[in-house]
Length: 107
Length: 117
Image (tube, rainbow over all chains, first blue to last red):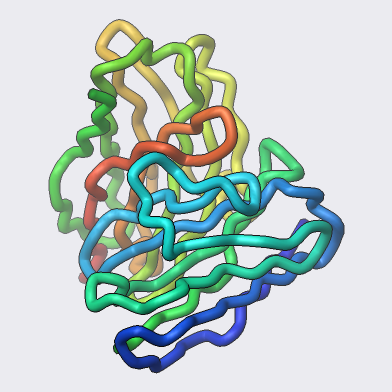
């Protein structure tokens, strides 16, 4: 099974900061990598798919990059509403998919 | 508008059986797989498996194979997640999610399951 490791597990930042989260896969997953945001008590929401493509309506301060086994998720200028836990997800080996353990962002 | 609506909170005893549901609307229900995702208290997202509503073909995650059963009633646009014998460790929030072309593009609101003696 492909394992996804995110770092850090938690992150404290200030409004306006640039924030970066990494996600590493145990094997090459090409560009089959998505990012989700889950606000406290809420349902996960797709932010980015195929490494770097923003879902419709997602603010441009969110971005993603990477390929193969190493991926990065960034928020260019942190806003209050970005308080959430962020998960990467690989779907290279369908039907199996797997999520990273999550990164909790504190402001 | 695509919408997935799940059944409500459940409180059960260990050993009891349960079936929870996820009803889709706003799209052709048989065209998209539905996955189930578990979130234990204070923990992350875990993929449990998926079902094709058009023919009931299922894939189970290794950690869930043999303990849960997925089914569907495509005439009602509903998929089900079922347990025959609940454990306290099944206490969690359960989400259904629609598999779009590349990602889970729509999620149910979640069903909270509490298993306690």
